[in-house]
Image 1 (cartoon, rainbow, N blue to C red):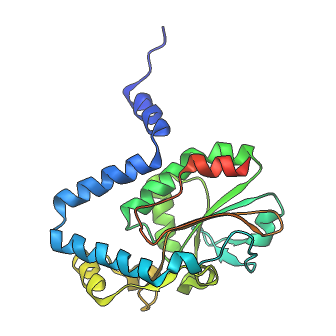
Image 2 (cartoon, one colour; image 1 turned 30 degrees about the vertical axis):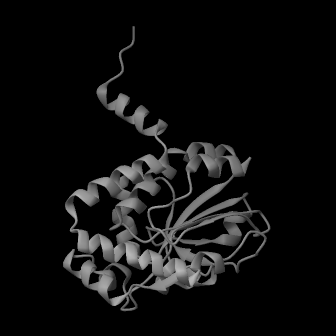
Length: 228
């Protein structure tokens, strides 16, 4: 009989786990350590973003975004046109490596990368963080797909995803040593709301999952189903 190592059992369990379960666990842990007043600020920002209807105004299914070219975590340029010439393209817009929910999503997408490849599709993740920050993230989380740096949120802006972090939330981030001007390389304090898109080979949006609540992310299994 072949016995699996403890490490392999942990890997197998992670692969079977749904993303929402991972994110819910992280939310619960944060709630145990973060002051209630701080959590209230984050919740209030989400409510305000929802009131603005940011997700509703974002690029919808059937739209055709402009082509773009961005550097990856190694500084190599990737163009949407080149990626689409190979097949369908999955775009994951995320906030940055400082966000545990973004990290959980990227790890989950990393686990389904073989299925994405088998479907003839490509996956890239886009954030406003610098190339250097993306390199650190790829190295730390052993990611096997490109992290593209969207300086100034130019591509995210085309998708209608960008907002400015409110002053009271900026103060919280500063106290937690989340230095967005340093991480993103500009003083704008702008971020994209998390979003996942599937583009058809002609660039048309086939699937869009956009949510002002940064804890809500598209399940990898749902993305794979949409590719079929």
